Image (tube, rainbow, N blue to C red; front, side, top):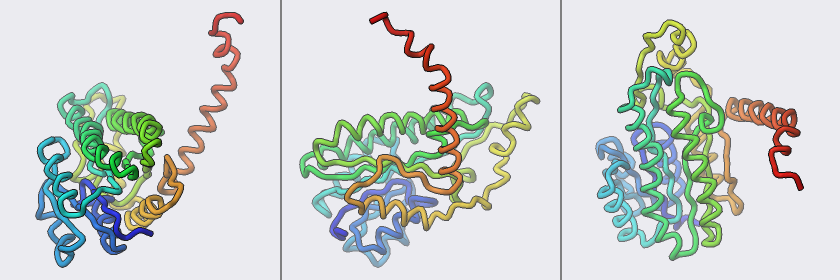
Length: 277
């Protein structure tokens, strides 16, 4: 374990970001903790001035991204791990979604992640090392009713992360996609916007998501998730994808087993779409 590694973690005021920041600080890493409001992370930096830098950061604001990355380099001299954690949820049927809310989510969940990544990559390429950890979701592998646009943001993160992993491999830069299922974070509470269905046929289907009826009773432990992410970051061969939570594992295996079966069932139709050899 290289305790001199420098981490930047976005969205540290609550949830995964906060628990991961605490775990990384306790492990002795140099950590740049960020949040839109510094008051939410002041306690993380308190008493840790030598190895912790707290920065105000809204990932939709390029000037704040540039300032944060520059400050990290000035204080610590390098960037080894970027954790793109900042994100929000949005609950609605697809038909009834408010475009403004959906676009706001894409700006944070996808474009914010990409702008952060673009800002650190030049430094990682120059040092010929680095690890980009993107917090996706089980919703980036499997879709659910009531969160279609959220699924869209995470599918986008999955696709671009996989491509990025191939592009940066020659520079000894790794990419890991984290795919949690239900954890006790604020994702479905304060961090999510909701549009209540007015169409009767949708109401029962999406109610569990829009009402947040399971909020506070999720099976996943954010502290254990933080430990798992640090374990992946410390690995000599980190995974491209890391499922977190028993639900994530079982739901994903079921989805991909069914998908493979479907491919095999329609194999003849698929392969016959080519020109004759």
